[in-house]
Length: 210
Ligand code: SF4
Image (cartoon, rainbow, N blue to C red):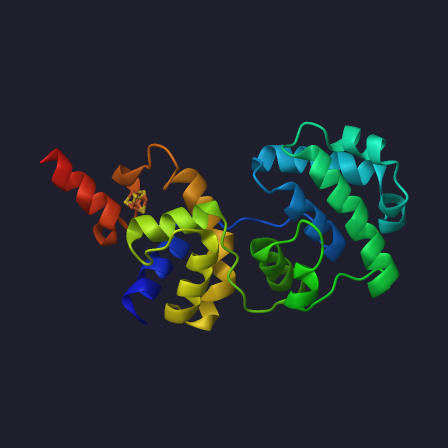
């Protein structure tokens, strides 16, 4: 186990993992799209509303776009997301017999699906080893100093180089919660952080204050 993996182990031990509410792959995919740049409570509320109104992929495919927009209104970028969701439902039915593809290159061709969303689907639905890097994972990894990167895509690549495969799937599950509750975007709670002794950001902060 290298130094970075030891830090991850400490975070895993001290953090409650993020729990996936849905089991059906298409709902996991659609809810992950809804979650882009949105808060968890909003995503949960709007997802529930959406699946209550549209219980199957067919219903989503045939949805009236204005009605669909109205259903998910309240979540950021709801117009674009509604369009993506309707288009994805059509593509899954027409090209994949209603199944969510299990290949990264196929997922990335779907509208509104980027690296993070594809990796979450592959990890959660198909048990594949991928690192899903969102803004929380990106921020935490850079603050600690595990990587030095400019965006989540670079972070994903850098982590794959230095972290053993067996940790990949767990990174999103735990680091997102850790980033929301402890290593918050504003006012990180360094005073109660279990990895402060390893953290570059914390070290710099102490130096500035002394
Ligand atoms: S010490 Fe502070 S900045 Fe470093 S990981 Fe913990 S909460 Fe984040």
